[in-house]
Length: 477
Image 1 (cartoon, rainbow, N blue to C red):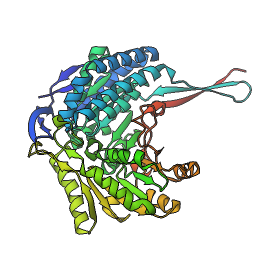
Image 2 (cartoon, rainbow, N blue to C red; image 1 turned 90 degrees about the vertical axis):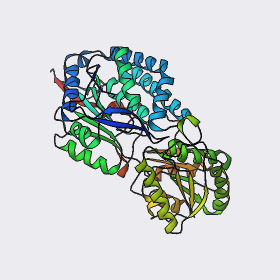
Image 3 (tube, rainbow, N blue to C red; image 1 turned 30 degrees about the horizontal axis):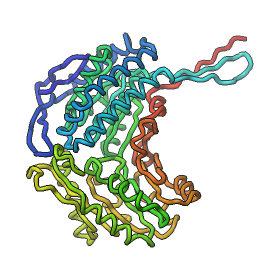
């Protein structure tokens, strides 16, 4: 059984219970995790508090940066090992897992360099006063990390929190913990002091709930569903704990008739099949100008029919979904679409070599999806693309903004004026013009509006979220 990692050492679960670890590619149990409870959380938060009070808050920003750079270098050395852990644990094709391992290296490299560049300001004020601001860490930060991109999301939230001077307690999703437990072990080897980084595994309603309600947690970072996000906010409110939320999306890709279709097509396909569609920023709605609607669907259909699905080790276009229940959920969306007469344009193929008990779902392209249908409104978290036509800019804007979400969007057009009009009109945390995702962009602030959450991670903006601004006014005349 994999134990918790608390105070730079392995810790057995207080209750002695475990959680089975299932390989999504085969449906078979291959390991077990410690099932954390309130006592385990209390131990981890206590270790983080002691580390903050006695060590980390007294460590210079430059030294924090050096330690994070050492961790980045450790992660780079063990990149392939981490990718293999992630692939088996999450079912990702090796190429995706390798990209995730490279991303966590880059996150810690970026935040290592940013640690000593988080500055305050001086403010011109009345004669006889000098006024300045300081950015101070919250203290102990809690991080609820989901199962779809554990290494990447750990890197973007924990990297920023540590660089800003906080100590961390992390509760990964019970479906995907193995890579993060290894990262924590490597952090200790890199020299992070005892208690600076702690990981407690377990279920969200047990360990996760105890963590966000803990009186000694000073900030919570949560990535997950809107429903659970509401529960987290309510739980954290008991102690007035600030929360950063990233809650997913129903992101539109808007394609105008003047778009470069050769450039657009592979990007649109990748934006929905990457990680089997289990991506908060998946481009799951495709809005196409009516004059090119049929032509685009024909070309997209050809691309979808060539997609192949299989186990992580087969390294195809898509791996399995994370668990059996997620497979059933996605199948339920498709069943509802069939009952409602929504047509399938094309589907990928399950490779003959894929294990029969794996949690697979072939990529599916649907057409003429009504804008108010569940498939156009709710996050499916599977490789399902919903296409619909639009008539003009106003129609495209209304459709793009016509959900409760607002995380990511893209606009495909050569018209410079239209690019800016659309970018300004779409309510979204990120808008990409003639691209989607900008290759991940560690440096680019990420977060949403509306039901997609609030606060920002990634880039320098994340450091501001992991600090509290203090104003000091000195009267000297």
